[in-house]
Length: 318
Picture 1 (tube, rainbow, N blue to C red):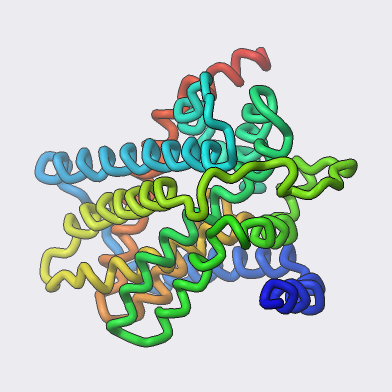
Picture 2 (picture 1 turned 90 degrees about the horizontal axis):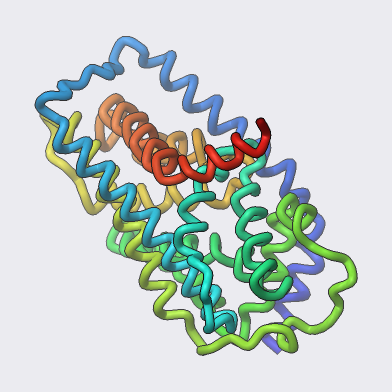
């Protein structure tokens, strides 16, 4: 009965929303806000960096960004296992890492396409499609779960635990159907029209709750945050750090960047959301520069690990 009510709400209201236009408007608004802040505070923003003094901090931030990529890849592998693929001979972790850079390609779906094709070649269409599609939801649940500790600031943060409720065997198929609507571009690239059988008949989920994958995703978000906070400490010279508050804002901003696939890799959306949510509790020029350097470091980590994949693609075109 509860499931029917939820599905009815989805069918009556959510299906009428053009999420593609909403996402594009949100992306353009975020970029505009970010650019407006930069030019409006141009005199206060300084990108000066003492590389001799801060080389260790930059290196450790880079290492934690590298670690986050490996943890994310390990979580994806365990998601595939959770969906019933127990005998994995191919190295899913390596392939995930190699294709991670494709999230920065306009459209924000091409890393999903590559991973879908890879799983489809070694298993079934259903396993490839659903395991690839639901992986961002795992990340979103982990980030929301961590951000929910902000309940000490406001009871509102308790609502962030709601997505976690749906991450179980009984409701997972409803979530997948919802994601198909939200990720319209992904569906157009991947879905086939002659698939009418029930999902339950095609996939055998190993356990009620994907605890292992979820815990690894939590480690992924924590690693990302540590990489950011190291950058923040480089420029936060005169202010008392508010790590707890920054952590909540980071998780929320990263989640917003994740659910707006129009933004390649969340670029612009994550940064604009962070600046907007942090307000004036911390000098925004410090936050701004920290975000820029964190973006450069995290993107460099993706580029370094994905270099073999990019070279192979380039050589095929020559």
